[in-house]
Image 1 (tube, chains in turn blue, yellow):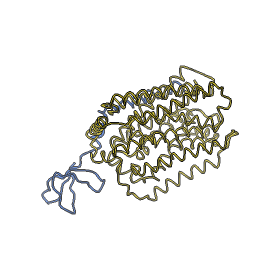
Image 2 (tube, each protein chain N blue to C red):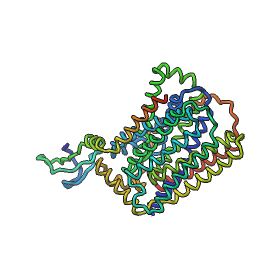
Image 3 (tube, chains in turn purple, green):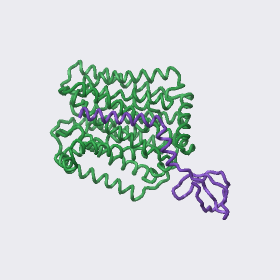
Image 4 (tube, rainbow over the protein chains, first blue to last red):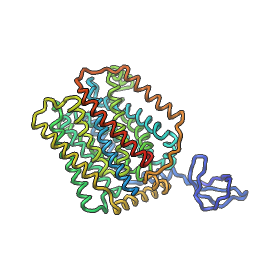
Length: 76
Length: 416
């Protein structure tokens, strides 16, 4: 997600920078036509959800939880 | 040198966890009302919730928690999932005690360390690459701890009437599996650099939501639930206090998992049975009528437990095992897009601690304090004989361990 930002000091394209609002990390792209700095802020939410769902370690606790609730309903 | 310092603090965290998780049993012994297992668990979780929000606010400040989440937002999901697992497992243990008694149930759910060991080796590179002697020491110590738990539980438990063996054993085993699996989210958080206090703030949301749903489902509605709780209001303070004390132990347990891993941290925390025995036997006089044979078994079990915990404490990770830990961290950083520097510095127990407490932090602490004072005002002191001298001695020892650990943790990591 490229966003345009104003910087108080010059920075080199390609460097990772911290955008103050939201404190997100992004990579600086070449300046736009007006000379403003452009930062590519990756969409971490979508990436994180994809990483979570494809992580086998996520499904094991989830399966254990479902199994535990079923046992609880049986013994309760 | 830094690794050795962190190892030491991890071992100490495990020992402190054992003391305070064991002490958590003491307030619940004062409860004599006929609350159902689910409601007992709900009341404890209420105390847990209050403690889990107030402790991080006091120690680090809510803003620091927010900063952590910015760095690794996916861990919120893992924390809530871990909390759900804890809540269900805790309720299962209450049913297990009801159905087969503590002597059978306790060792069965203590198999959580074996399950944790399995996940630690499979997913987090624990014990892999370590010298054979260290691998054997850790595994053998876990087996010895299990045997010691059997001995102590069998000799010390009051033999409750057994209602349903199959259901009780199933509940205890399921609790062991859930508590063992709960360490996947724990470890996941700490290899990625999350501060234990931040992790617990979200962990408790899973706990309280799960327990509320279970209690509502059992009670048949909010009106009925509130009525049952109001009837038992004299006991709420003791259960919430049990939850509060338990949280202190769990915070220490989290640091143990962070700095020595699941395979070593959990067996050390499981020495809580020894502390539970001290509280029950010395303070509440539960062993006053125990036979000589039973006392002998308790002494043997306790000695075995101390020896096994000592062996685990000395089986520190070596260079090759640490490399596997670093590989796990690199994998998580890559998968979830976490800043590698953040993960690495946090794994080494280094973080800036320049956050000032805000009015929000003090507000949370004030509400937590007021809640406990309010519950204490309506609490009933049950007619129970307590050995005041032993109470002072065991409580002083527990507090001394906590203060010494807290100071060492602050000096070494600034609570990172």
